[in-house]
Length: 191
Image (cartoon, rainbow, N blue to C red; front, side, top):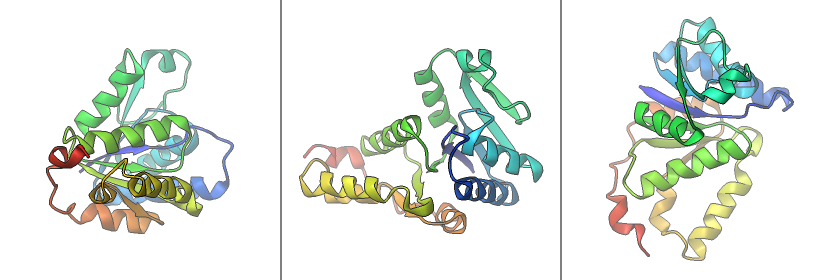
């Protein structure tokens, strides 16, 4: 299975986030999953990549040229794909993967996560979407999604597009189970 990882590049976050990212990377390597991520060498992205590599896991980076030019790419990953733009980067990640796991992150992670949800809602991408809710990081976002549903900006059924896991172990359990039969989301996208 190839899994997109969306995660922080910040190196200043609490140690617990790094610990969880590393644990997930080790679980991925042991399960034989390939991680596809933004190619960064620091933050949660770097921790997950380092953990996977230390257990002989396979990890593919997809990074825009300007980030490589800045020296932001991870130097030791299995494969690095260089794109011209951020949009091309995201599109390439979705083309390569069967699932998304969003670890805590900033605006880039949020944008990637919401695009995954939107693409699935429109029937343009069909993989699993899991929010790894370390330290309750995504609690407020999930409440906001609930508000969207309650105010009829999304259908109640759309809440099943993503799932929330509190630990790497729970994330692995969700990934190893097949996603519930994919609905024809596009048919109910219009409210």
